[in-house]
Image (cartoon, rainbow, N blue to C red; front, side, top):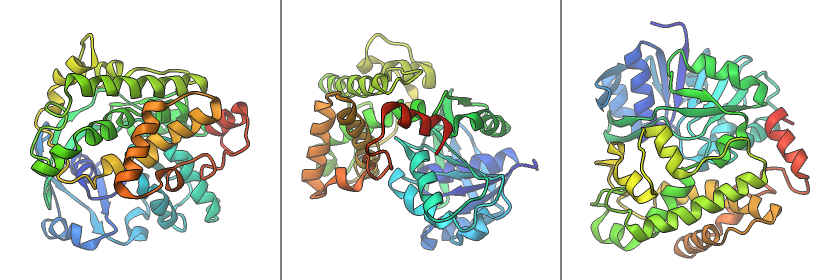
Length: 363
């Protein structure tokens, strides 16, 4: 066993993969899930079977629906839940987080670390807790059963940033003991606005709505769901995202095709070919229903903040706005109101410099 102790919060597709992989590597791992019924099989087996790129059985230290028990005494808390649950997870953790602990959102989507920190402070947590976010999830993975997960591919390089940015190096150094794939980003501006999930997930899902409903997701999400025309929409979303990032003076911004090269070693001239050449996407099926995190998470927690920052900075995001409006129409919700808007993030009325300072230096 290694000295570093982990808690993994969330027993969905990603949480099961992270917990099992860490346990197979020899780390002490506690697994938390709010719904106890979801972890009964894992409790019974005392671990998770992992398939795919990593194979083996990860024996877990604690499997619980008690957040205090899950995070007590651990060094790193890996939050692996949809981004629309970050707020509630932060509220649950706030009374129990201890000095020196590191919380990593996997991933933060857009402005996840900022939202999490805001909640901790509003809940009265004054401890020396470091909150960081990964720019993307480390795996292409899926849950294959109640106590089984499959890692299709481990991505090569995962940028991570803490708020304040001066803590990033320490966070990455700790994470690298278990995951050499994590690399430091300049700040949480970079991890938030290089959010490629915002480009891929909602667009492909919305543009394949009828197919998802007709087949219950019985097609390969990336390989079959991305046609030449769909790829053009993805490129438009990507271009709008990058324009907003540049207006925020993002130190390092890259396109979706550049990200595929960095994360998966896929080198192609266009986005359609890059997606279809990525072996990590082969076998990943579409959602079985449109009521999926690719819309319910990625629209309010990714597209909405990108659009909101665009409005504030005078950058048009017509295609992104169209996707938000379509999602609002389908779900009969106002995702701008429920999502990470400027007001909810506590940034209303601030100048560009003041906003950048919050991301880089903290409040």
